[in-house]
Image 1 (cartoon, rainbow, N blue to C red):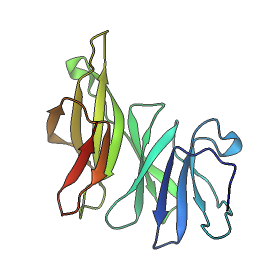
Image 2 (spheres, rainbow, N blue to C red):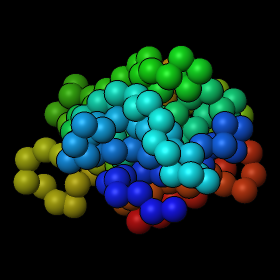
Image 3 (cartoon, one colour):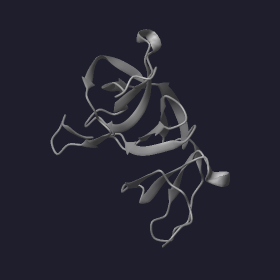
Image 4 (cartoon, rainbow, N blue to C red):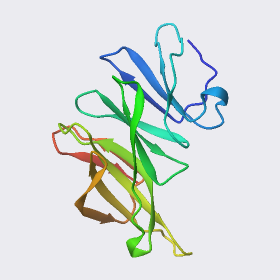
Length: 168
């Protein structure tokens, strides 16, 4: 099955037997949404408004929420799959130190429903390379500790609890 639909992120949801796709703003009437797709027929279900330029998709450990980092805002959107709506959008930026953080990549925290790890890139001034950090958010609230890191462009679930892989 081939579908003419631009997508910046894909995620298979085995419990619902759907493929979730994040559709960028250029996606016409489906732009800036997350849509369910029947993997057998290719039929697109009812879109869920996600925010400005949804990108990567990850599901939390209980399978009830999708997270998507937004390319058009320094934020992550949380989509409640049971309610079929975005229930929260939280900012990953912290301007208190003069840095404007944007979400680069996300990964669900294993065995912690509602928690997501965000690899962030700071954009400020003309300093290059741009600083990077990794922060964990629980229900949209940041944990106190963050990890400064040289370059993290992508996060992936690990093969053991509490482990993640990072790539640059």
